[in-house]
Image (tube, rainbow, N blue to C red; front, side, top):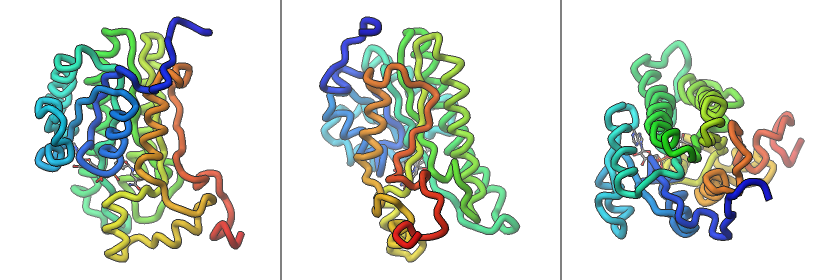
Length: 265
Ligand SMILES: NC(=O)c1ccc[n+]([C@@H]2O[C@H](COP(=O)([O-])OP(=O)(O)OC[C@H]3O[C@@H](n4cnc5c(N)ncnc54)[C@H](O)[C@@H]3O)[C@@H](O)[C@H]2O)c1
């Protein structure tokens, strides 16, 4: 047994965790899982009405409105979570937006900047506000969300993929900087996950789910809870010797390098 940490069979028993982007999709599903695994939560989102609706059983003070691009709002979120919970053991950064899909010669710089700001600047500001508290505590685990698109290039996605690659690099940088102070920082690289966003894009004919499934060694999209489970592991003490990791949650997407559909390769 290394160190004094007690490993709980309830992975997140007593862990005080802040989740951004918790009104929808991965953030919502992951936070619900963290709660089932024993965590105490503060949930946050820019869309406060949707957050309150999704978390009607949680005390209103634990449902915080935040725009992750706003530095003061990120600092206030962590200060308030610290006061409410008595400390912060974990942070899951799920606030994010998908890309404007446009050829490089046509993409509007304002759109490029917005996607970059919410994904990259937002992740940095949330990590830094959390780090301020965790470094003083001498402990904590932060999980960011990159993407398979942060590792591989996709045409006409000039803001999202580069921002997600930068999030992975930011994660490594913070992990190295804060490891000696007891704070771990890791990242997830999900493939396409079944969320309302993907269902909507599919219904609008903008995403071909069948094609994505054929490109995936495990033959299907991911589920929100599968991303949540990977995050729960990284937030728990079971991963206490992991920091600076980029963990794919992708059914084999990044492992595959064949010329076409997996089944016909
Ligand atoms: N769904 C996928 O297939 C997929 C794949 C890889 C990575 N991701 C990443 O996972 C994260 C969650 O995606 P999702 O699919 O759950 O999306 P989603 O749209 O369902 O949820 C994102 C949440 O973030 C909130 N949000 C957006 N901008 C914000 C801001 N500035 N401040 C605070 N909250 C804000 C939204 O209100 C929303 O509730 C994103 O970072 C996304 O890039 C998603």
